[in-house]
Image 1 (cartoon, rainbow over the protein chains, first blue to last red):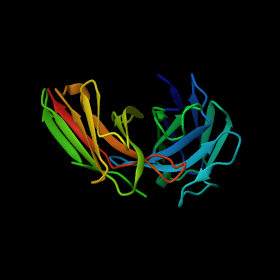
Image 2 (image 1 turned 60 degrees about the vertical axis):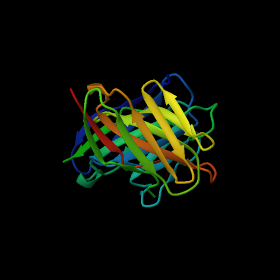
Image 3 (image 1 turned 180 degrees about the horizontal axis):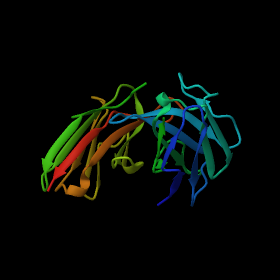
Image 4 (image 1 turned 120 degrees about the vertical axis):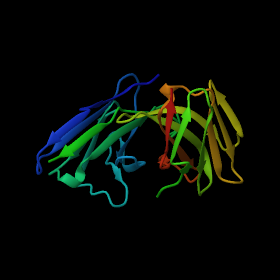
Length: 118
Length: 112
């Protein structure tokens, strides 16, 4: 099956610093990647949709200047949490869909990044 | 906005028993998917059922879809301790190119 690698798996940082999370599709090309945020025992909330070579589409209420998304290639998307604050502490998960299938059918997920901002 | 709503929120069963989780949604869909998440990990796709399908099987998994009631169920037969995880339903709407919308999930505990 397709593999999506997400790195780092866990990060602890001081308030005010920026954190970059990488999401790579290892064995397929992903025109579209999705970034989700998940609080403990809660569902996944879509933050933004990232399309290769174009600007990301952010969901309502998600600050695009706070959560910078770059999808520079068909295999890599990054999420940068800028000037992180304790309220940004959460579990962030990326997912990707294959190029050849219709968008939003079966998604492949990264293993997630647990961000803790002190 | 939240689309799928699973119930129960939590389920605890003995190994060997069957586990049934339900999902209800609000708008018309193209397909509905079930995912599994182990604690602190990403999601793994389990099964996809299209709006014109009523039932689908995959190993010990059985998924049903009732579009008239806007509901789906996931049945795990002969459960194992390794099935302990959270299970989410996610829907793809018919209205164009929209992303998956996840429900709140059911936390399943299978006790050996």
